Image 1 (tube, rainbow, N blue to C red):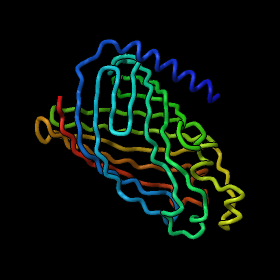
Image 2: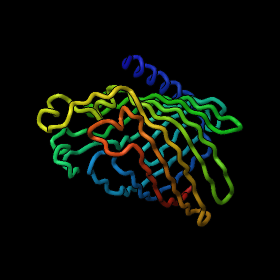
Image 3: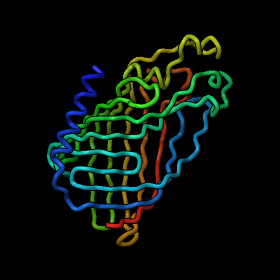
Image 4: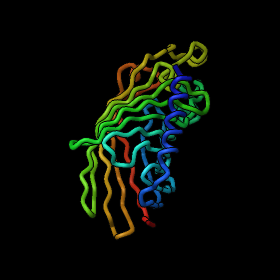
Length: 252
């Protein structure tokens, strides 16, 4: 199944490269974003993340901070296929936890997720279904997402509410939230092998033009974990709120 997914992604990429011989006007901006996303793991602190960003947008390609993608059809088409690569920051480092049992567990690394998405742009918003797989480190498993998003745009501002469901396969949940027999033996925690599950989310993102070139960005998201994840001995909360705030300078 994984080989089929990889072959499908490469075929889609080839089609997108072929389709992108004509570009729309390129838009380029750069700035800095500060983000906060609390860890769901027990007694594990999360430091706020501040990163510089470079954003490039054309009819068929885009690069936004930690995500790059290519579209088969021009941006804004009713139907589209999008191939993307995104940095997935989900991780666990036993050195970051104050829980003496969790500190005995194995490290769980971040990954780059390669994904293929179908988008349908309708009068009531954008519907998207996506399937992806980690391509770095030792992370196995499939990630999926179904979402709806609607953009309210004004010349000086815009707000986009969004709701959806994110899915992790059994292998991915085992990597992020499972406890192996060997980990259980040395930590004293119960061994745990979660099945496939995910989380619901609702959020909104937006922007405000401070000047013709300077743009203020922000967003918030609330997530609710399925019981299969929330019941892991590593996890101490089933809900979380995250957000970001940033500023962009638009060059063109």
